[in-house]
Amino acid sequence: MNNVLPLNSNHRSNLTDGPSAADLDAIETEMPLITAEVELLDAQIITLDRAPSELDARRLRRAHRRVLTARRELANRTADYPEVA
Image (cartoon, rainbow, N blue to C red; front, side, top):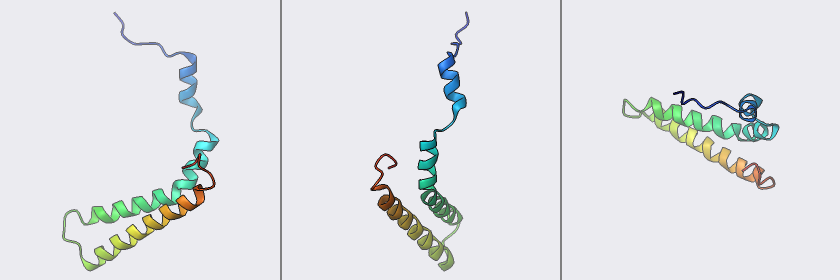
């Protein structure tokens, strides 16, 4: 007995359509925050296997500050566009 369910045509088209224009706009709006969070994660990964040096500590503080700045700017920008938040 075959337990595989066939995909209906609506479901298949949803898989190939990709993100909508609104989705892409939301991603573009959030990109500075995403980039800042990746930089913070990179700085944290560097210190996983060793005690952080003074340079590492500065790198972490700087990356954390960038995340906070990006969050603030995103919150201020999306206050006028609640559907993006």
